[in-house]
Length: 245
Length: 343
Image (tube, rainbow over all chains, first blue to last red; front, side, top):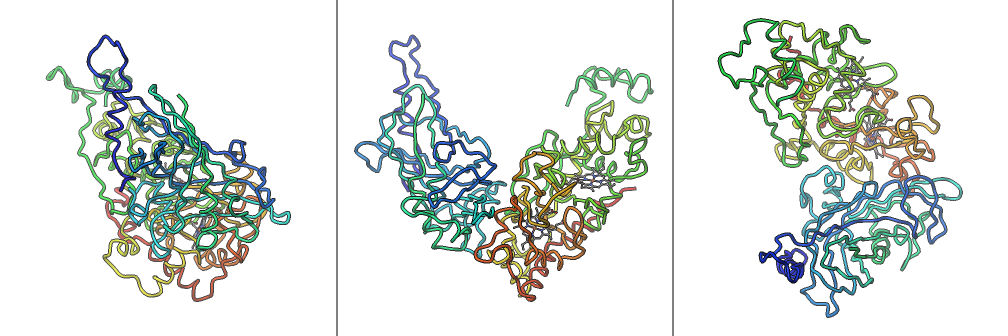
């Protein structure tokens, strides 16, 4: 249940860290540093655009992206002596790649982090029908009860050139067995002045490492545990993290 | 509720119009104040919460909106002279009527919508689409309402307005549309564990809600629409109204894409699709089974694993799917006396 731990202690630490030395007012600053979580989407460095077949994946297919929706949850900030006490931002956050995605995180424990981990999707406790509030986004992400219930972790759709013919692909990911556990290996610092925690999602990683995903032999993943397992493995290294003041 | 214009114009007008509104008794009494009773729509547990609107929902607001909806006065002196909203939006058919080239969209659960009309030309909330209907489509002549024996008082009570504007007409209609909520189909009762579906309906439901038919991705439960735009492959080249959403965004990936219509009461709203090309649900299901046509903007969901563009349903599966679509009929809604013509 670590994932759902509240951040009270770290928040207190942050409050202390924010107190300015020699401040004329003795009362502690009641407002902790404010952090924003921001999601950014790109394809090998190019900012995500929803139009032409402009991207090339590992298997050599030109592709476009027409839809990107997913959840992230359980963002764990790793300390050097990685322990159970590492702070966790539980989420879940619903992300629509077509919108700008900023979330108010409030206080984030200050410190030097060696990296982070996160779930691309929902923890099993929430991945049940009715597990999330009935917002429009969530009901559209529902995974039908007859197929196991819960929610889509990700809907990633577009077209690819299949022997010259633009062909649809729909990489839908769901079911607890296929929950990607992403590892983000960039060290970063969370400083006292607040700032933005940025998660970059490189969509092309979905199609490579460890598996070269060939859309022409599997353009529709939902209902196929085999294809979803490939996608899940590939997503493990799809995110990077940074923190800017 | 106070509005600058109303405060300025209202009292002047009232002085001119007659003694019934004398305000010399209570100094602070606002002659234009609303007199309303709040109304709350109870939703099933699996429904999303409706969005928050600037006007609270009131019995008076809904009643006024209803009256306007059924009143041909609304079109007087405008391009649709002689028509009421209800002329083209008939309750018995889930507020549609069979129409020529552009199919009439039903008025069901539109409070949750954020894009309106087949190509999503109007975005925003109910009030935004009502502003469009009132100002652009009907071009309502508000003087007709201002000089009416009853409307000024109805507007005052419902909306606290002493000088009716098109915006007020849109506000009243928006309240009425919030009342047009359908939650009592057989499928709803099934979701609430109140009633069983037949074996055939269950079979149709599993086709609808699984990869076999793959309908749920766009006709999402419980609104039976995702309120987004898709090119489902009715044709492979596009001209005129058929370009769909492309006419609004100019984005080639939206060529031929239309708003997903709700499937609530679908058995009552023939013909089908934006141009009414299919006369029956059987024809619609045949289309999804084997009639989908390729184009570069075809929605990715329409490309099925292994089988290309067909889902290849058997005659039995097709019949089952149609049987399920019939469970989406909400007879309580289409027979609700509170939604009928009040005149």
